[in-house]
Length: 94
Image (cartoon, rainbow, N blue to C red; front, top):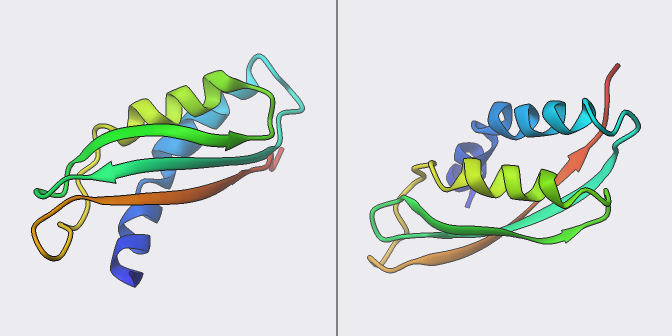
């Protein structure tokens, strides 16, 4: 589980890009976005969507989901797929 979390966190820059893009239109944007995604047998993300988003900006979750679909993460053990839910806290440091 630690290896998977580290692999997900390694993609924080892409998530941050989505947040920075959203900040251009919503200057006070903050909150939590929980994403659910499926890691296929080869480690590629084969599906992603937001499951909760208290920022009020659905475009943010859509951008993160799109980025996630390009990720390759550690292969699930056992050769099947695995469903992961991962929370992101969006907070401006400006």
